[in-house]
Length: 276
Image (tube, rainbow, N blue to C red; front, side, top):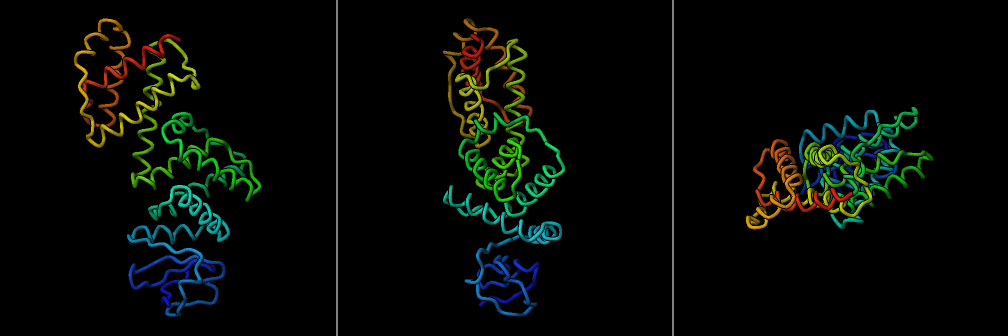
């Protein structure tokens, strides 16, 4: 039996747990009639999670001030789907971040507003599994609420999922997606072409950029391509020079040194694209 510390609403309460200090318990009617000091069996809860940091506990309590109980229940179903698809226990912050995001997203849909997502193609390519699950979640929400949620939301939800899975801040995840989009735009301008987003060479470029950024951030980039670099510089000077321009943008955004070997890989990808 756990001791009730605070009732947040009829379905959500904060309880004292012998192993985790405070936990959030969620279940239909779980908080009804309960008061501080009462006992509650943890098996009565459909879901419980730990908000270890006091700041996150406070944020979640504030969330419940404006998000209705039925939506909280819906969000817990959604988060359970994500955990099942990836076979993980997600960082608890997703209960705050994703609930808050989707609550306002649905509010905008009901008001007839549509926030465009300019990074949708890059998000799908960078995080295909997250994007697939996000598509499932948006479809589920649309059916449950009888709403036509715009496709752009799939990208935003995918970024939230990736943030929770990797325990990287949403700000950092967003910055990487925007960086890839910027690099693609600079490439189009420099090569004077409109890249077909379904072209296999575009898919290869974006996936390469995504993996390169990951490796650079983790300090796992040890390639050496000096001999090939000189050949490409002579054979494809336009693409080679463009590769260095892209690397400079990456360096400014990531604030990390970009290995010179990256010029080789980028030049090869850019040369394939330039054939369009």
